[in-house]
Image (cartoon, rainbow, N blue to C red):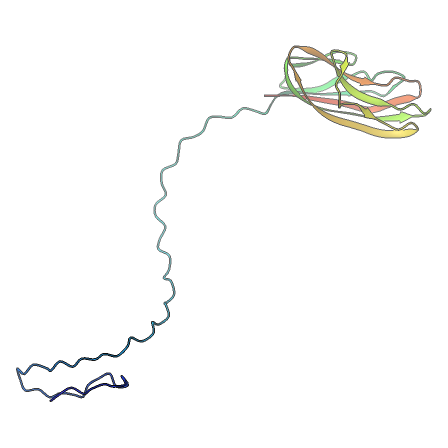
Length: 191
């Protein structure tokens, strides 16, 4: 029995062929085009996570950003510079920032972060100012100016590097009509 010839590939299966035992099947070539590829199936589930690797070595111990700090205040002062009082310092007994008396603070060589301020009242038209001086020289950029009549809160921040042991002062304009209240100075040594 021969093969069925396929002209339009509408029937891809030849008719059933009955063969006697031991008789080879005839070659039936089918030459139809391949159909379109079907869509790709969904991605399978993610496999299990592998074992965690060993921990790396511990880094070196860091150092504190501030090695010492001191907090000063001053009572109300009229027609005079505020007189600083050491309120607190850290660590206890530190020697890099020490009160030198009146309005002066001794500083060891190093870099310091400062915050300072006062509430100043002017009753007669004089402009009040506060600033930071090192060895009796006003540090540029630290001058803060108030108002000629009335009250103003003057505050400032500064970052100073001092190459040798020095004396720092909180400087103000002194006049009979100027009163400085709630004066403070915070000094922190970095490193």
